[in-house]
Image 1: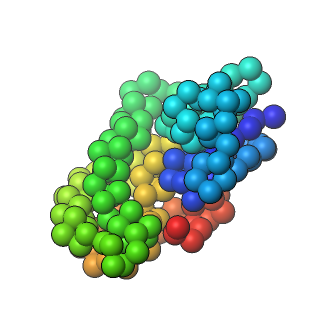
Image 2: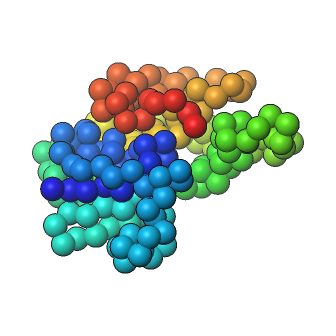
Image 3: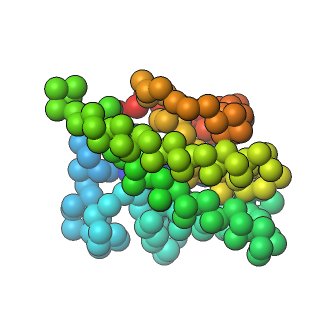
Amino acid sequence: MVTIWGRENSTNVKKVRWCAAELALPYQHILAGGQFGRNRDADYLAMNPNGLIPCLKDGDLVLWESNTIVRYLAAQYGQDSLYIADAGARASAEKWMDWTSTLAASFGGVFISLVRTAPENRDMALVEKSKTECERLLSIVDAALAKQPWLSGESFGIGDIPLGCIAYAWFNMDIVRQPHPNLERWYQQLTERPAYRETVMIPLT
């Protein structure tokens, strides 16, 4: 059986658990990281020397890096669903997985400040600066989604997963957001997916 290590509220762990849920893939989930610890234990570091989450074990295979894990799960278990056979279409979808790392850098300035920092310790100048950059980047996504229903193309796929995890937090933080109608339509589609509701739409902490 597949085993996934990580805490449920981690954006990167959400990616992996959401992907597994979309595939209806049974797995063992071991809480690790943050208040759960484990990720600095010797046996964990033997699997993932970075000491980060998530980590996945499937038989003798051990993987870390959330996007890599999502790609593996789709290829190994999603040939009839999430995996995109055409190399060009697959690359077009996967570019959004990697691009989301660009957004995550600025998004962290908003999320960490507003969700994980006490109000008296927040740097609101940083929040506004980071939010402005997020809006600029999300306008790129909005323009792309004006041309296709999903970041993965005509159907939902792994290209939608990394940004989908951030989108839930973006649309549920107490901030004023610029209108991005295509992004909002895409996010609404995500909220209608049972796997998304189960693994991503949990309280922000």
